[in-house]
Amino acid sequence: MAILVVAEHDNQQLKAATLNTVTAASLVGQDVDLLIAGAQCAEVARQAAQIRGVRKVLHCDAAHYADQTAENLAALILSVSASYSHLFAPASSFGKNVMPRVAARLDVAQVSEITAVEAPNRFVRPIYAGNALATIESDDPVKVVTVRATAFAAAEMGGSASVEPLSASPDVSKVRVVGRELTQSARPELGNAKIVVSGGRGLGNGEQYRALLEPLADRLNAALGASRAAVDAGYVPNDFQVGQTGKVVAPQLYLAVGISGAIQHLAGMKDSKIVVAINKDPDAPIFQVADYGLVADLFEAVPQLTAALAQ
Amino acid sequence: MKILVPVKRVVDANVKIRVKSDGSGVETANLKLSMNPFDEIAVEEAVRLKEAGIASEVVAVSIGDTGCQETLRAAMAVGADAAIHVEADTATQPLAVAKLLQAIVAKEQPQLVICGKQAIDDDANQVGQMLAALLDWPQATFASRVQIAGGEATVTREIDGGLETLAMPLPAVISTDLRLNEPRYASLPNIMKAKKKPLATVSPAELDVDIAPRLKVVSVDEPSVRQAGKLVSDVAELVGMLRNEAKVI
Ligand SMILES: Cc1cc2nc3c(=O)[nH]c(=O)nc-3n(C[C@H](O)[C@H](O)[C@H](O)COP(=O)(O)OP(=O)(O)OC[C@H]3O[C@@H](n4cnc5c(N)ncnc54)[C@H](O)[C@@H]3O)c2cc1C
Image 1: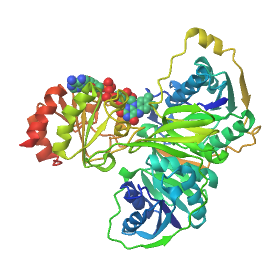
Image 2: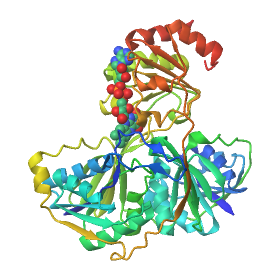
Image 3: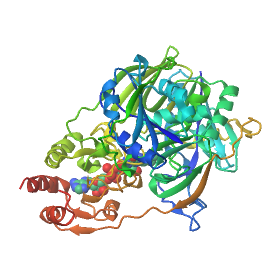
Image 4: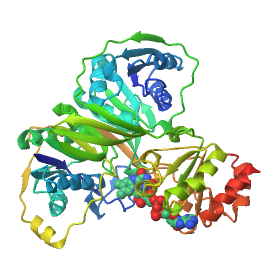
């Protein structure tokens, strides 16, 4: 039984979720290999070789993997899949995009976004926005699985796996990447920050969101997040959205400011260690999941909080 | 150009579900069922492409029990021209859904399939990608903007780091994200008109697709619930709690 983990990276740096995915894979078995497919990504392969618990790194370097299109990546994964009983990837927009393509070609089911490994063929995954947990068994010859990063600890560094070159599959993609607008930020990544400050519709507009929450996030070295309502209204970019259909986060501290606490939002943050809610409506559902609730006008409370943290 | 739009009937997004006490699944009896919200967005996008003169026909497909016909009528009430109901009594898993859709694509010959990125019941996020793989078509998942011109689709996708725009030749599969559009409501006259639009039924056997589930659901359990904590009276108390009790700052 060998497990292939498809690494997520940007040709320069391994994405953190890959480390959590390695941990999940290690719960299935010892022989965990990592696939790094990209263009001029030798540095990523070098980083990956240091992940503890990785047996070997397959490094495939070719221009047509630069953009990580689902079509080309799936074809490459299929070229090596016969050696593996399990194919794992993070349940990020990257893994969600690629893995079902692999599963369909193998004529096997995919188990999406697992939160626990109970046996090599048995996994737990949330359904209905996390309001139920399904334990799923797969008897397919290959298990294609995506992994919710927040449910598994990050694998540690300090290993020394071998790096083996893997030959590229033919370029089969008809897709061209014609634009990319990536959010630039010096803040920690939302998906694995220790503290997240999230704002909702209560902030009123993007200017007020930034004026109030950026200084607070700076003070706490926190990532910034948002509710769907705040993203839809254009206060912040789409990749800030926390929830059932956005990002799932589980920081040490999650501060929900002007967020009501809809089921779909809770689905993305209810595994946080400590939740703080600031909302002027004492009946807001967010208070039912908050460890500390402050019923207050956020326009007064947030600047006070930022100031108090400076002391 | 014909557009195919798969629509799933799911427990309404505003309903809080309950897990069955015997752990066999989720209680869905007597709950309000609606079109999966992402599929509403897919129908809306297809109808807008038709209104813009880019598409000629929009066909909605739903897989499940007879209740699906209500969902298909809802799709036709907002502008789909015709509907196909694939009759299935058991819950169909994503791979089987993708195969059924592949068979329907072979019959209907659409140039574009627009589907929701995930269904809000099983949260699987698989069907569009699987269908694209089976058809060997290019895919654009999590779309927040779609333009069709000159036999090519240009699609902006919502990805973890921001936005990415892809261009691809048709035929292709697009899956919708929340910000692609705001679905319209059906007007009463259009609801009446939808009752007269063609709705065909077909069985998985007629499509020659085996829909036996591949994944076994061993149990469905209640997640651990967070308990409400305490209310603090002011910011100073909050900071004290975070520093001295929770010790997270
Ligand atoms: C298919 C689907 C998927 C979805 N996915 C997601 C998702 O991934 N993530 C997500 O977040 N949502 C998602 N939603 C939307 C979700 O249902 C809610 O609509 C959304 O979370 C509400 O955002 P909000 O809490 O910011 O806004 P609101 O519900 O409008 O709440 C605003 C809050 O701000 C408070 N407030 C206002 N002014 C002040 C003030 N001055 N001081 C203090 N408090 C104030 C109000 O009391 C209120 O509680 C989804 C919905 C659907 C149907």
